[in-house]
Amino acid sequence: PGSIYDLWRQFKELGGTSGYKVFWKVFTHDFGQRLAFRSKRQHSVCPVCMKHKMLLKTFGHDSAARNRQKIMYDNHLKSQYSDRRVYWALRASSRLMGNTICIIIDG
Image 1 (tube, one colour):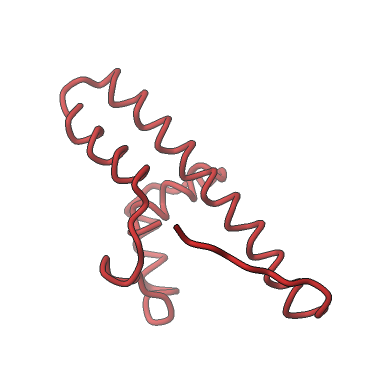
Image 2 (cartoon, one colour):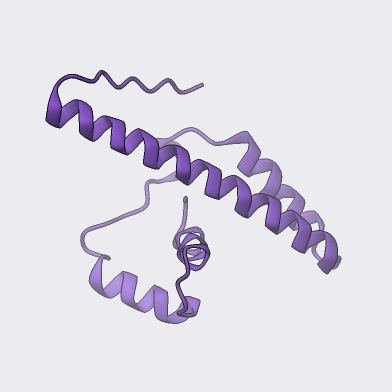
């Protein structure tokens, strides 16, 4: 995720029950000094995320289209997170056991 709002949405998808305001307060209080979001210029932009965000803006008053687009965007974020979890597990295996080589290719 690229923002605290995106992080909250993932939290909700994983079964979290708190509202955004409570999530924001806890995040800034407990993690604000330890974690920070990178600026937009420090990492590449996912074209699929950009497409979903643009379409969500254009569907401003069409709630049905907006909800369908939000579901597709949420599914994309879940898929991205799933890929990252696999990468994190392989990277940990590579670092700890030494018998695995983990390579990530951006592009």
